[in-house]
Image (cartoon, rainbow, N blue to C red):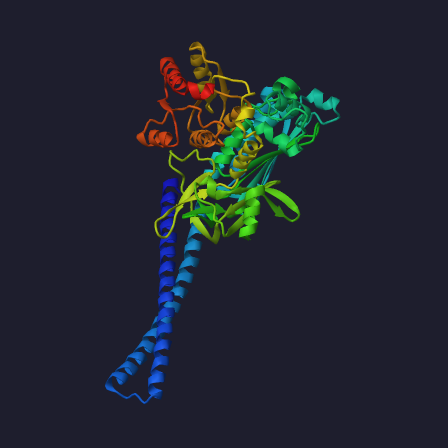
Length: 571
């Protein structure tokens, strides 16, 4: 069936969901009216009893008695209608849920076609590398959304190619290590709740922990003298530009293209992780939603706003009183089963005040990581049609889509997995010195250039160097904040659409932090609309240029904002 037809059916299913929710609201209104009318009838009946005891027998009294009887009958009819409406709504809910499942199944496809494509590519890569590889496929009958399968194919292909090129050893090396000359790559899939989990496993050389740690120290990703947990160490291979190829040799190196894998999986609201035993192979695991559009969410309330949080990453939730909320606010941790886990307060992240009287905490889990998200109130669960964000918000750090409520309100869907990146940034910012006195000891640099495109970073750096500007680069907003903590800069030039922390969020973080609030920020983006420009200046941007740009445009803008801000920087 053509994808457009399925999308049209999903659109109608979404409208049906919204209509059902509106009817449910009407049913609740009818129920409240029925309760109020019943209460009024009882009070009127009590008043009539008092009048009857006093011997009242006027014509007005008899008229009121008749009206009371009619009200009693009307109340019974209304109660019957409310019950009937409730039954019909229950049936409608069951029918709409069944319709959703049926439409979703129209887009489900077995994975065996995808797996066979990957196997062909693996054999071709092995032939090119002069290696012998046996491919094992498991779970080809598992079904997933066609859109998910198509979008995930490049990431899986990269993992398979990495397994051949950087995991499986040459036949002679394997023989020397006591292994079979033929390497083995296993591609497997299995359903888990509303997700599908993919494993790409090889029996090759494995990840070189020492090489990864050395590279991380060389890039200042791990402080000298500290020893990260193995899970933290392996997560570094998914950072942009991270590769151990120059320190671990060709067969032991990993990381080439893994940053792109992480971005593509994150775009699908999924997770990716790695596990390895030195000399005994590596397993990459990807978990993504089985469907692309329909999700079960929990609605959470913060201030005057309502947000949707998918349930697949929720571990548990609990109410908080005022003292518990204050404790979490101070410590930024939450006690769970004798362990303190990091906490995030959603209110400041969406520019809402923190309620003083109490709230609720939702514990989120992503593989072995956990965090506590504090909100004002948790509402019920519901299946919703999730729509993609527009281009303006597509790079938002923790919104992944939107849905529409029964009243027509647009509700943003929070990507719980991206909150772990926000948490990492928050933790680094909290560890940084807050006093401006400590900042004067940091080295003074020129321009911090932030862009996720390597070619743009290279071109802009050449332009600025030709204009005699000292330049340092960052590949996204999180990396830029790390650089700001480590050194002082005169100007920041940032793109808007970047992974993890986009340009708008970086701009807001710079302007609200007293250490950097004086720092001029120039937005350099391909977005030329008035809407993008206005939002950037509202957040405090000092300049705005659009791509493609010339050397003269870039250098002139940097000189302008540098001159305007020179006294603040020198001081």
